[in-house]
Each structure stands twice: as C-alpha cells, then as structure tokens.
Image 1 (cartoon, rainbow, N blue to C red):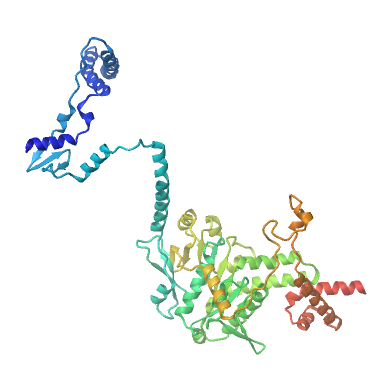
Image 2 (cartoon, one colour):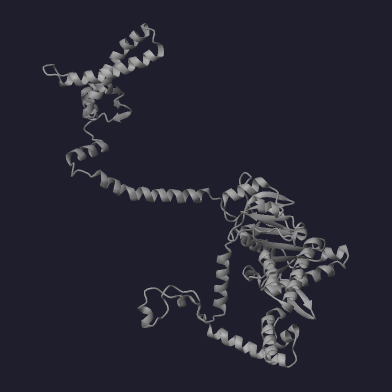
Length: 535
C-alpha cells in the first residue's frame, strides 16, 4: 500500500523536477566559489567592498565555468540533481500529503482533477495562439473593468432621502424641515432646520440642484403644514418650478381694488407687481399687535432667479430712451426697495424670503438688503464668491467645491452648519410628468411651429440649391413666422386706432388694449413715431 501511495504521489510531480537546468547548476557553483573568494578578500582586509568583489567574481566564474564544462568534449555529463527527493510524500493516517495536497489513499478511485490532466495529455488538440488568447480574454476583462467601476460608483454613493419618507417622520406644523443627510457626521443622519423666523438664500451654478432643493422645501412645507400656518407667494419669472405648486391650497391671495389676486407671478412684470403686494401685506401687519401678528400665518415668498431678474431691469435702463428709460429706472428702484424692505423688516411680521440666485451674488445696490439674509445653502460655489455672499465656513465650502457633486450644499443657518446631501427630487422629471398629466387630462393637439434651428440641409430645397455643395449664408437666416407677423400687424392697427381716439399715454393705451403698461411700451413707441412722422 505504501508503494502505491508513493507511485500516486510521483505521478503528481512535473517531469522537470528530475533534471537540473544550467541556471540551477550555475547557482550551485556560484555558492561553492563565493565562500572561499569572500574569505580571501576578508583576509586581505578589503571589508565590505571585498564581499561585493567576491560575490561578483563567484558569479562570473560560475557562469563561464558551467558553460565551458558543458561544451568540453571527452568529459562525462554533469550528473543531474534529483529534485524529486524534496517532494517525497509523507503518509499520515492513510492519506498521502504532498506539499499541502491530499492524495486519495485508494489510487483505484481517480480524482476529478487527475482525470482532467489525463484528458489534456491524451487530447492535446491544435496549438493555441497566445495572441488569440489575449484577444478572447480582452472583451471580458474590459467588461469586468467597466462593471467594477459602475458598482464602485454606486456603492460609494450615499442614498438620498425620499420626500415621502421625510414627510412620514416630520411633526406637523412645527416649522421644522429636513433638508437632506449630513456628509460630515457618522452614519449620515438627517439634517433638520427651523423654518420659523429666518430668510433663506440658495446660491449656485445652474444644474447643481438649488431649484430642486427649493422645490423640495416647498413640497415638504405644504405636506407638513396647514395653510393656517404657512402661505406661499410664488414669484417665478421663468414659470418653471412654480408650475408644480399652482394648485396647492397654500397659495397666498390678496385683495386689490376689491378683486382677489393670487400671488403666483409668471413673468418679470408680475414679479415686480406682486412684490409690491407683499410689501403692502407686510405694512398692514405692522399695524397689528404682537398677539395678532402671532396668529397670522407665515408668508413665504419664493423668489426664483433673483439675479437674472435684477439684471433684466437694470439693463433696460441702458437699452431704452426717453419716457421708457425713465420708467425703467423707476422699475429698478422699486425692485431694490421691495426686496430690501422684505429682507430688513419682514421677519418681525412673519414675512420670509426663500430666494434662489446664481453664483454672482454680491451687488452694491442690494448689499444692505442681503446682509439680513444670513441663512442659506451654497451649491458648489467657489470659496471667494460664497464668502462674498455671506457664507463663513471656509472648510466646508472648499470641500464642497473639491467634491463638485450635484445636489450637495453647504448649509449655514442659526441651527445648522454642515455639508448636506439634498433629498431626492428630480425637478426636470417632475415638470415633464406634470405637463404630460395636464395634457392627458385636457388633450390638445400640439401645434406645429417653425423654428430657426434645424438639422443641416433638412429643409426642402430647389434643384439649383441641391447642386450647391455648401449651403450659403441665406440658409442660416431664421425662417419668418408668418402668423406672428400678422398678429403684430393687428396689434399695431389696434394701437393706432386707440391712440387716435385720445389714448395718448402709456397707461391709457394699455387700458384701451387690455395690456400691461410694460407690454404696451413697444407699441406705444412705434405708434407715437408713426403719428409724429405723419404730422
């Protein structure tokens, strides 16, 4: 039985273990020569250099000597060293151990891997091309590389909180709002801020999540507070984010000339007008007692793209002339005054700003007003710009800029100083779903429109144009909108008729045409010029 075990173990050894290669012989000879050479160098007092010299001489002599002996005729062949003695099997309790492998004691029962080895030996098949092997493995390796990268990115991302989950864990009418998860605290816990008695500013570059977080805050407020506690004025000149909240019961309404006006501004002129209404509400509350003010709901004024609004009214001053220029100056002065008043005096009577702005935040005209807006969120804004906007945590601001992640903001409020990952709220997807739902409830055919932008050479062309290899500059001109041109002519005719009937001022002409004074200005200028030229 022991012999059978030894035979089984010997079959597991590669044939190369029984012969000694030239390299192995050279190593043995080098060691044999190194000892006396090193002793000689030390007797000569060469020290450490002697050790190095002795080793080098031993290696040189071993290499040259081995090569000479193997090619010298008449000398017997250098005997091979049997390396297999180092792999001699050891039997323990019926099993044979060979370098950690357990060999079945009964050789009659073949091992699975032995059968595979035998099969490979019996059916070698055609020789494999190493280049083809590399080509076969390359796609798999590349796919695995990309899959690993995707999994690593997903695993490393901290999951965002869902708005409905936040609503379930929020106490009603307590003015506390969860704005996301902490990125600095262990376990990334939820971060809460107190909404009561503070303005909030959200600054950051486009597409970094400030409008999404603003929409999330509005959603959470309307889901966790009743209209008797919070009312909202939506002043959104773009009419984008505010669409999602157009039908909520929390929309504020004021009486103007005995007519109810819902504070949902959808263009620049309406934003300016409704800011005046908000200031009027604030002034009225200042006539109430402290107890009466406390019974009033918070009026949260959502002001979207504040800087773009400011720049629009400011540039009109340079773009217009005459009476229109003077009116533009008045409009800009009113904008500065209204925002300054709300920022400076609003908190005492529960009128609060929720303001979104781009990164270029500092402005001399608004500097005094914006000093009062101390709380806010900074989305990937360079440190110097964030400091100019009133933020102070340089360490968090720098870390946020280096991370360069969407939906990640430095939060600085009286009750929170942290780097926060905002809740999950895909604003673009929400707006698309909103429009699709509205279209489904009130189906209307989509009107075809003529656009000045189209794929190259996609419009119908004449035979002469088809022969032209490159499009001319005429192809780049906008296609005129016939319907729009006719409508402008109709408006001009109406304006001329109203002007001839005695409506010779902007306000009178606007009233006669049923338009706002701002929108009627271009018509008024055109009509006045035509009548002056005619006279």
